[in-house]
Length: 78
Image (tube, rainbow, N blue to C red):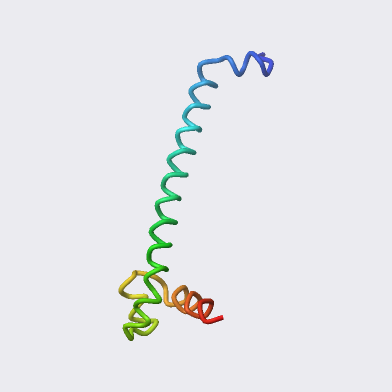
């Protein structure tokens, strides 16, 4: 039976640990890209409102849920 120190020195443990690190990095990058895309869409909403689009039109054009557009516009007006 391995103790903790011996277990951490096994090839299996090292590979699993490295795989976990890589997965974490990829998830972080993907999450960052998605947040950036959403932020860009949200920044566009005030312009589209000024151009006369309603919430449903904005949601459709930006591929967002109407509830998100509504909440953003409401928060901007407060």
